[in-house]
Image (cartoon, rainbow, N blue to C red; front, side, top):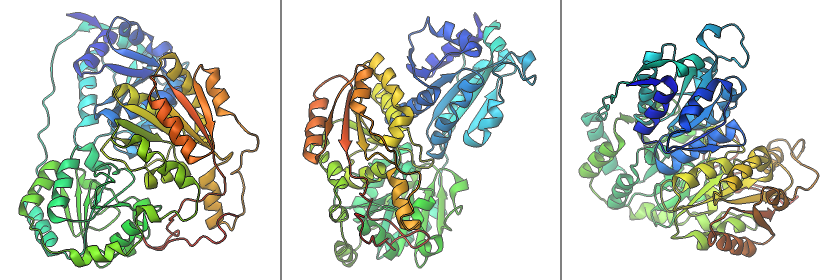
Amino acid sequence: MQMTGAEIMVKILAEEGVNTVFGYPGGAILPFYDALRDSSIQHILTAHEQGAAHAADGFARASGKVGVCIATSGPGATNLVTGLATAFLDSIPVVAITGQVQRALIGHDAFQEVDITGITMPITKHNFLVKEPENLAQTLRLAFQLAREGRPGPVLVDVPRDVQTAVLEYIPDKLRELPPVLPDKDRVAAAVAAINKAQRPVMLVGGGVINADAEYDAMHLCEKLRIPVVSTLMGLGAISAYRSLFLGMTGLHGHERANNAVKEADLILAVGSRFNDRVTGERSCYSANKTIIHLDIDPAELDKNIDSSIGITGNMNMTLNMLEKGSVPHDLSAWWDKIAAWPGMDDDFGDEEAPRFFKALNPVIKGKDYIITTDVGQHQMWAAQHIKIEFARQLITSGGLGTMGFGLPAAMGAQLARPQSRAISLSGDGGFKMTGSELFTIASNNIPVIAIVFNNSGLGMIRQLQTVQFDKRFTACEMPGYVDFVKYAEAFGVKGEHVDTPEALAAAVAKAMETSAPYVIEVALDPKNMVQPMVAPGLGINDFVKFKDKNS
């Protein structure tokens, strides 16, 4: 069958089960857009290409499928970079398709020409410049395979305009699925022996558990052995925060009970965590006097940040099932008694006001089909500490890159991925100003995102870090001049309201969830609030900052 390259691109998207793409057109990608017009694939025109990348990312995290974003050459392609880096560091399957100038013009500084494959090489799992039209179909098929199999990640395919317009024979095909990587049986046996001997074990769940859809396998193992569980930021939801085995989040702003348990453990079973610096604190202190069993799909992660006693690569579900079969429950009552003496998740925030806003959401959303997305900053940490996530893929946040402006477009993508759910975006006023223009996209497509903006007229986490690390020498952390985000939303045709108490926020969210329209809620927040607990910079995982006169 004779088809243009652009028609083949659309055909491959349909083959891969893609029903929604996010993008922004331009001259170099217009042949593709012309072909897309005749397909059943939904195209969401975003306000900015960065919004398209984050929306594709949110779509992928919420659904477990590959998210797709589209941009033209030059500035269109470079505007995807932050979104691709966000997906790369969190191992999210995204395929980005960019237009490129005609092949004869490449390397001649043509209008809107950039070397996007060179630019994105460090922040994609792989990328391609399609130089020959006959390679187009298989390249796109391979891009999807690479994005989702093994350790997921973003893949970029750059397609010159004349490749899109070339007429060629379309050949139906399907790439052979890669077999699962089997774990080493001897290493699994060694891990089983160590787990059965441990008196103070802790399971650490990371984002890899969720990416592998292995949360139930992890939960079965820890429930069989009654092992306490802590989570990284990316692993929240792998085990319900309402389960008695769950001690909370660990890391820089981790719960005291969770961090103390990691410090005092004699064995850490780390499942799908890359031991990011925000998780470990001072690394030699973190790993001292304990056995570390590290499970990860990517062998490059083993011993990269923390030296593991036993490192196991391979299919995570298989590995966890093998560990469960070989392990034997034994008495951990003394360990649980010690854990119970440390402050729990509900005891960490002292007299700070801000956490109460986040805790107020729990009765409203518990048991409902919701998705929480966040930007980055204080609100992100308060959400991670105090909103009790029940299931995998209910919390979507930028962990590795820490991308401000991620929350709103990610919520947009998540809402479209799971229309039966309700996406709730949490942002600070700083991050919301970066991508708040995506309210245009949300309004024009009637995407029922609930956007909550915590407004302290400044950059709260910068203020906190300057309090702790720079003796309150505040600079560039305040944004004088009030922005009324409800009026801003109304400019796009989106309704909203202001709240200033936790009770009012809970009532506003409950009301918004009863509607099928987008809604914006602005929360007035005192800029003097601090995220607590906080691990002291450069110290061990349970060396917490002692805030003096924290309200000053």
